[in-house]
Image (tube, rainbow over all chains, first blue to last red; front, side, top):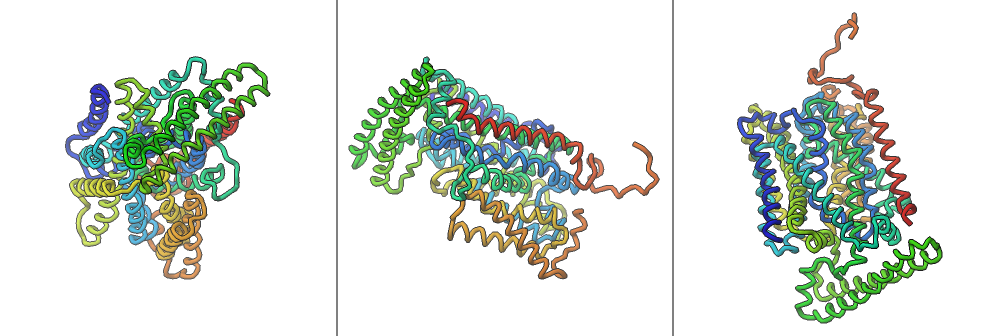
Length: 572
Length: 56
């Protein structure tokens, strides 16, 4: 990176953080700090909800996923609009009516304190780990690519997030997220335009789409009923619905965003903004990945996109084998480039037989070059069994570094940091709020103490910041970063959602029954995942939720007199 | 609003922000917005499903 890139990166990243601190300076009340100032408009809520969900992993990993396997990942989000409608119609009005600060406070109103603590505990457990991955994921990629010190990258990201989140609380998180999303939109749009401009002169945008489609990179909808397939229309609609309902309805990092709205209307509009725009945004990022694939049909692509790791092994023992494979790959790429060029030329002929033959030739050339790529990865694995050979997380960053002009590289790295900070800040704020409101506050009140102070909230937020940074420092590389976060969420979200669905819709079920049911359901989900793992991870959301609801009904039938809890009426 | 002879309902805790009725507040007035979101999703789904065929 050039000096100009570093100036753009530092000015953008630190400028937004400083703005958040400056806007929230002065005296704060406990409620303002935890819930926000309640002067937040629908646009800010909409962008904050979007920014919280879209972490750095989204922008590093998603284009690489489309590059590798096409746009099918978009199906993961198909249940999201429906989930947001349910959150807007059912969850949000109840939260606002009871003026709760956290989602788990509602469980205390509806059931009892132990169920509230269970909900809060499950959230803290999974979100505490996930926030570590949120910091770690971009740090590992950026440190590998730029040669930065990994620990220093993690510590810097964590320190900036902790600084403005602890200083300004929920309001600072929402305010900064709006500007971070502006940086993200500007950066991604710039990358997209430059990518199109960097295609060969005789390849139009339409031609690029044709090539992407011809290599199955635009297949976004899979109608298969195979449960083992990770992304299908059905798993996206059903599993994605339950994942999104749990995430947006019960995860404090999201609940905290929309509860800060000026009114119910503003909060609802913010949610509907996401219901309408989230899938197009994801589709756009995946399309960028599909077009990156097209770009590398015409430009030299590395045989392995994690260039630093590759180079280390090329220069090490056995490196000669890798060099030979690299040369073979380069030769195969030349043949493939000619075949794809021929296909693009023949596409203008209008002769279906000729076009079909040219496409088949290009696909055959692609199969050949992919075979060499697979051989290169296998050889790398033989030379170093600890090396992670899935290099899709490095595809987009490689393009950014090698193809974008000075200044724009800095902007794109700022996109990654903005996305990381916006997610981490929301997570830390939520973890701090949940700890101080649901754990510390409950404990203090049970001992006759006053409500927690702003200082206690700040200390809790800082504590979770340190936990996240600590976890990130000791985290290991996982096969695919974005999937790791989703898998972790899917193991817990279903049961948490089950708790809330029972609370909302099954009025006869009381605290004892739902508490025991949630523990049994969570144990069943973890056993199913670690012992069998036969289904795509999205299904665990449905399984966990269903088990929690069914167990609650069964236990309530078995223990009718003990399980009916008095506070139930308070929630109605 | 017309005056009512029946006893006033007990205000909920957040009476200042209770913009809609308590059961499923605003379901009717927001129904059109939700319907628009669903229609938008379905149009997008069809476009995504047809994309590979359109460009080939």
